[in-house]
Image (cartoon, rainbow, N blue to C red; front, side):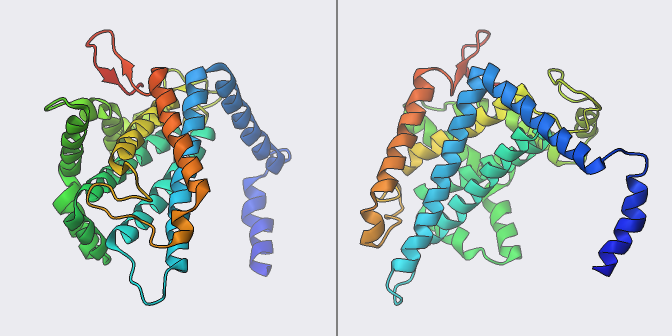
Length: 308
């Protein structure tokens, strides 16, 4: 406590010198951002719907991760978890956690940071889709525990869009259109902005300095403010979770692709709450598609786009 008191009476005191009620002001700034975000929700129907659907998706992924953990706990002590169970736990946990983070970043005005994290998010979705379709890939993923093994796995299977190509082929087969560029088109903007923001580029720095042209900034754009343009992040993520929904089919309870059921115990197989949530999740995508909220047709080239 003495160190803390010394810091407060010297460094922190000097930092706050000349400011009136600094703690209250910081809270006021946070409340102001919350009000801006609420205003966007109230006045932008697309943003409202996609934000709610993204929250539902994060809840579904969280339930899947928790259910796999519960199945582990209920399984006989002598049984070993399946490779697909271990992979599912790793993927669902990461996808849920990152999605909650992206939602929080958007709500509190960190649009650029949310875009940077989205690039990594799409790679994780790609990897999960491909693992479901490939038992050997799943096995390699599960065995890549050590940092050097994980790095080797990434370079072998993920770098330079290797998995994205496989996902594109998978979706082309699902929709019955050979050599479709749908996956590439619907993530082009996200990949471009993600690449610029993740690496030390002048574009990333200037984007932060000058902000989004549609932003309502009360101060310098380096300070966070919620943006209606963040709807493009939500749409891109939901599109790729839709591809994942395609790949999962009847998972987690029934085998799909090259994965067996993710539940080995009756408790999870008979869990009605999982069935209820899965039904809601399916209806959600149907609603988005029926109302042309998931994929938008561009007038110029008549191809679906993910939004800005």
